[in-house]
Image 1 (cartoon, rainbow, N blue to C red):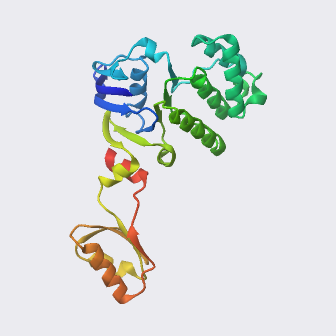
Image 2: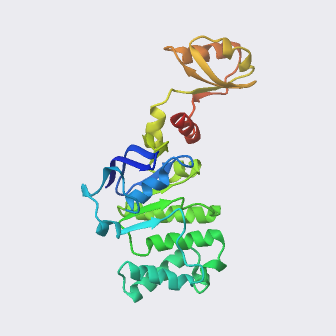
Image 3: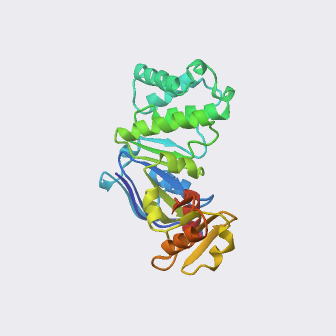
Length: 293
């Protein structure tokens, strides 16, 4: 497990992280979500040893992390670190050698990664000749070349088309299935919800919510949806509920007194057909907005 405990980081008078505690479980895809300036990149740089916290500790497998531990991690930085005028295969082989691989092993793994990312026919091209999306694939291959024990990825899906997103998500799932803890940041909440096992929401340098999407939903008020003709004519005057939204035939509401949702259903059935009634799954975007207000 990769753990941060009580991390505080300041830049001059500005406090970037406030007593931040979070864990990246082995074999788990953890989505790291927050607005610009929330502290995601600072947190990842501290995990990788690129920044030192003012307070707090980073642990790996229950002990304080070392530089040797971090050298076994794969890191995709916010500011990409590729050499634009160097060939793709040559560059991947070089980074494998940096991580202690033999030249033959690094080249074989580079070929395998390029094949899996659909870049086998571009292996001889310079990085600067690739599209931004393909450069992103190469950058991820750099993070994976040495079979890392943990993955720390800052916006890995930025600039990718839908097919590339799916391919990269499959790659990360495969690594997680082999026990690798994976932390990645993203502004794409639907993607985070689709592929992550858990998520951490950060705002103003503080963790404001953490857990699975279902756990986060369980901590919020229940929302019920009803589809029945002319529901807007009476739903706002119904006691024991708080209406979230209503149009002619569809309304969503939160029960605020015991049994209120059943009274709503009974009333609706007494005046017309009900074509749908049941709990509404709150989208991650709404959970995020509530957590970061």
